[in-house]
Image (cartoon, rainbow, N blue to C red):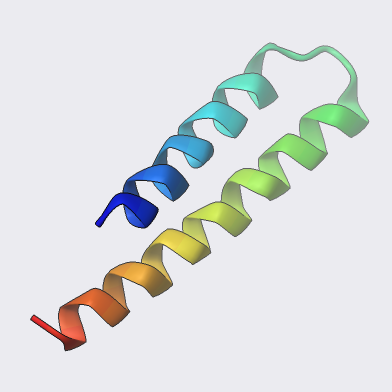
Length: 52
């Protein structure tokens, strides 16, 4: 499902940015966004498994 792949890509992007940004607040926000998109990907995956 494309939505899962999109969420996983967002996780990778935000994690990567959180490791390269020097500003601590921005780093924290990027890390938080990565975690949130990880939850979305997990929820979508669980829904998909229910219908397979």
